[in-house]
Length: 87
Image 1 (tube, rainbow, N blue to C red):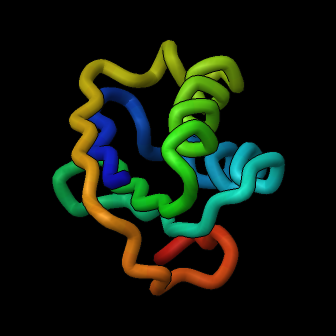
Image 2 (cartoon, rainbow, N blue to C red):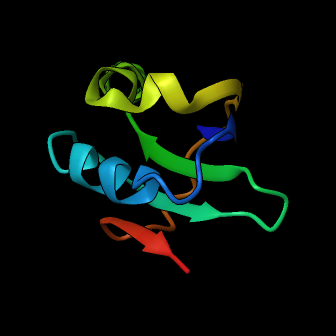
């Protein structure tokens, strides 16, 4: 799952919150700021876990910062170890 978040998503602890929330789920992936002001989140895991993680991000107080969310799905490539903030 790859999600591009737009809105006031940089400088508000978005990446840190995503990493913290991810620890409660059986997922791996990365979250990073993009030069255009968006945040890109890529995560792998079972579909139910990914859906729950996505909902948990909103419930963790991030929903108010998100103006737009573009989600795409692909087969997992098993290329991540843990969930990390990419700088």
